[in-house]
Length: 281
Image (tube, rainbow, N blue to C red; front, side, top):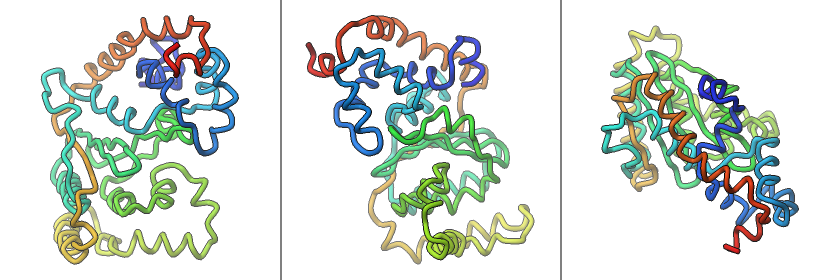
């Protein structure tokens, strides 16, 4: 993303917004809420370009689902018919599948994950893993790329557990957005930290080569014990274990920008206000 943005003379924020059709960005103004609501309402009677300029300045991107879907598309091979297709499973089945891949697959692979309220994208390369994500009005994909945290892939598992348990405050903290976590009283933050790490104790202080089987067997037992918590389909995901080569991913990113460019040129040149465009005027 950074290389393509530089080649195109764009910032990462511009690349992030221009990867989507302008209609998707316009739709974010339809029902504003949260910290961005006041600013969005003030821009409804201004030209669309001013709304886009505000989004770029504030790094307020499109939806997390659009972000993870786009990342899934550009990292897939052109012949991959499964691109964009998600499988719905229980959270326990999802965690078991991801753990299995993390233990057995040291190649490069990706996973798009969609929960009830959030969607994000996992990248695993050799023994490392990281998360790409966005939240409209709060945290952008470009910020995620710029501040990327790379972890030992098995260290990511308790963070995914926190996410699929609908502990959104903990997920924000552990997957990259720290404001809510920092606002917690110290004892509450420590309690949550202990919760995340308790089931991970079997892996602590052991070399990677030793813990793999222990972790896998321990996790299977844990999932079985917690089955009542994981018996409903709550996660949609797609694991791509045969992604496009890196050079193709660069070309896919550039091609996605080129595809939306004519529509963006027309919309940014329009004198219509955001409100008029939303009403179809």
